[in-house]
Image 1 (cartoon, rainbow, N blue to C red):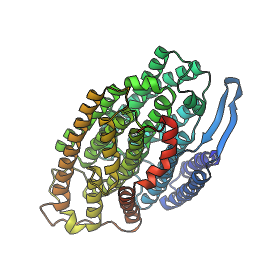
Image 2 (cartoon, rainbow, N blue to C red):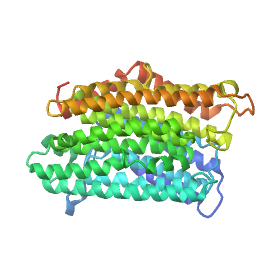
Image 3 (cartoon, one colour):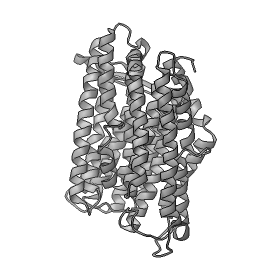
Image 4 (cartoon, rainbow, N blue to C red):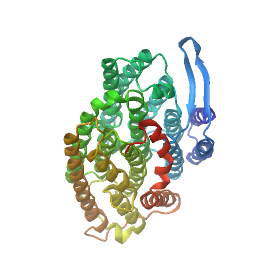
Amino acid sequence: MVILIALLVPAAVAVWLLGAGRDLAHQVVNRVALVAAAVTLSAVVASVVARPSIDRPWVPALDLRWQFAVDGISAPLLVMTAVLGLAVVAHSARRRPEGGTSAAFHACLLLVVAGALGTFYARDAILFFVAFEVVLVPMWVLITRFGDAHRAEERADAGARFVLYTALGSTLMLVGILGLVSAAGTADLQVLARGAGSGIPRHTQLLIALALVSGLAVKVPLFPAHTWLPSAHTIAPTAGSVLLAAVLLKMGTYGLVRLPVATVPDAFGRLAPLVAVVGAVGILWGGLACLVERDLKRLIAYSSVAHMGFVALGLASGTRTGLQAALFANVAHGVVSALLFFVVGGLKERWGSADLAVARAALREVTPRLGFALVVGLAASLGLPGLAGFWGEFLSLYAVWSPAGDRPAALLRATAVAGALGTVLAAAYALRVARIVWMGERAEPAIADSHGVEWFVVGGLVVAALVLGVLPQVLLSVTSDAVTALVGGGS
């Protein structure tokens, strides 16, 4: 696990130095990055199978340690991150980035993946925070430097929002982590989870949970701390949008599970009604925004706010089923959002914009492959049975309708009703997009269909969405034992 991070970070630096001060061929840089991403994927799979654990001194004077491990909660996210890291590098092979050098672009992609893997591997609270923050600077560069070349002012605004919001979230998260470590006397997340807040006064637990939940809510993002996300997605390059939706948002929800849910569960339980309400509002708000949004990339971004609301409902339920649902929805959204952003990013490159108000040729007529992938992504996004989006959202609604005994059942059932209404909105905006883009009203002008590496990446994600929908036990069996250890064997 340390080798992975020790591989990716130097690889990113090497890629950047290769192109510093000279116009190194895009294909050369891409191949170097592709090798690094492929080796990383192989090593991640090996670590997930072997489940090693590492515990070495880092800063002995401060009792900080290099602690890394793999369990059922982190394993799916590790594999997904490594796969998508390879996918975005491969997808960029024939797309020279605008706004900077290929070396800087690929270095940022590798650093984002390295930071995300470090976050999912980390079992020390301070190390978790450091790895989390590693991701933010390269993502900011991807947005502000390599974003939409025709919207320079909006790039600066999106980058500023991203920095300001995430800095606020990071500050709150750091305050919560320092409070937790100070009160418990250890930064070991495994020890903290076993203790479940014992020995920490109830009011201190509540303050810690409040700081952690508030900071991570910005990272997820949950309503109303979501306003940085649509602009960032709209401006970011395709690779940046994929990593932002499928990896960075997952780091926020993973942090909620690994920190407040695991370490101060009683305090999180007291905040759970608020988390559920915020999640339900986000589901409705995101769905309503999608019904009127004209920019297709921004629409997919707003749909992410809605989908993250279902994760919040699952976590707020306080049940084993709810946590399983949240973890499943987390991974499913990663797959579906990556699929949609690859497709929509490709369409934007071909069209020149993503404005739904512009009449274009019907995808079913001119680009059947991209049209098929878009329809699958939209169907999975609305929660159609048999596709990845169904199980996480259905089980989240079930769990929040039958919450743990210490949760206010009437309030949580009201949020379940709101979530169910959100699925109706999801169907409405998915059909709206399909009618405008897939069915269309014209047959000209034609655009090139997906082929080669692009179709391999998009087709692979279509298969993943189908497999998770038809065989949910593939993922549920991986997370089952870890969830049982975290919340017990109750329903």
